[in-house]
Length: 349
Ligand SMILES: [Zn+2]
Image 1 (cartoon, helix red, strand yellow):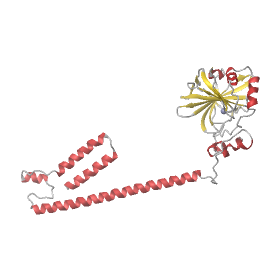
Image 2 (tube, protein in one colour; image 1 turned 90 degrees about the vertical axis):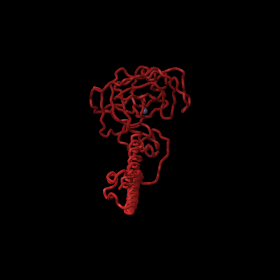
Image 3 (cartoon, protein in one colour; image 1 turned 135 degrees about the vertical axis):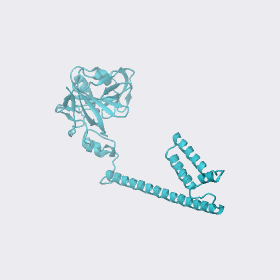
């Protein structure tokens, strides 16, 4: 029996040690080891009564040494059997766990293969896209395997903004300031990258302004009405989530920030102009800050979804000459309207 206790204590130590390496288990281990030591330590037999108390109940006091050694041998045999049985049980359990894990992996691989397997083995890797013809918006989803959302997504942008739910939308909080910038004609639009430190906060999240760019005509419509141009200010939060602020442009008086950008257009496409002056994105904002908001996507490949759209209700003005200059570069660089698929649109009261 002593051996049995020692064996169980051993197995407890093994379990405790393997289950948790925290210092707390060290104490448990030490206690268990002490139990083992105590139980196997030979006990001095000072009197027959004390001896009787120390020995297992099956060993009668004063039994002959030959009988005792027989019993001890039997205990050793029993311990060995128990140890062998325990080892067998552990091996069986490990095999069952391994088999279950293997089955799970096989099921997951099969499910992934079913989900991903296209009808053919064709995988597109093109990266040239445009606003018309073969590589136009209708085919974006087929050009590159990573752009399939452009063709199949159900939360795409732009949309015709109508039937918004009028609520007390919180004001967007802008923390924009004069910043250094650079300008590039990237082959799809004129894009302005601003230095860090410009933020907007909405719905409890803070997004940093990365860049802004232009489309002609405006991609979004409001109750079916389009605008001559739109500026998209692309923001990203610390988790990489995107928020795009859209400012519609209508014909009117010249706009300072836009003029600064036009003044610094590089002569060649893809060349970056980095002027030594600053530009204040705050000047792009209309006076009234009411807006529409909905969840959509990037309006260019890869058409990633999960983008928070904030569309200012009041258009900003730009002069006819400013509009004409952009139209010489990009007479049409707007993705067509996408289905809103019952998405919720909220708007400021
Ligand atoms: Zn855009």
